[in-house]
Length: 218
Ligand SMILES: C[S@@+](CC[C@H](N)C(=O)[O-])C[C@H]1O[C@@H](n2cnc3c(N)ncnc32)[C@H](O)[C@@H]1O
Image (spheres, rainbow, N blue to C red):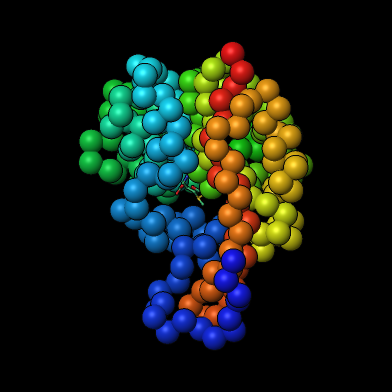
């Protein structure tokens, strides 16, 4: 991990995407990630389904749709859920996605999700830590219940040494807590990332992220 520096990076004259997550400025975040490709954790999970015909998936915290688009292009039926109407509107504004026969969208906050349909793949890229701690256990049960035996989870959890772990409305885990959440799963990928990144004002954010692909026991 590189040492943090107190000197602003002059090569970086636009805000990095992470400043939007700090304040939950989701419209700002969606603008800053426009055009970015699908997440590596999703691509890894999709590779592991290479021998199967695509069926049903949920993209939880889909945002402006980078992962949903990839899933649809690969033939999956997708239920795309996000708490932000702006995000879902941007997702539907992607070419070909409005009225796509394999796409259902839903605007709902994680804290009021209710039951989800059972799916082969539940993808949640960089979204789960934004669930408020008092709702996290029920939310996690909803997630794991929605994955059918043999199905997969792909996505991220945030660690206890991440700068945002001290924000009261976030749900972060220690590495042991994160692994324990996957009781009943085989961890096919569990990559711990810990590094410091400086924003355009010279403020350092520590990222402590677990990148996860897991298969539910059959
Ligand atoms: C960092 S973005 C990730 C978006 C997308 N999955 C990606 O990888 O770019 C987090 C997403 O979670 C959504 N989100 C945050 N808190 C939420 C909540 N409590 N309920 C539902 N969605 C939430 C935001 O609207 C945003 O789209």
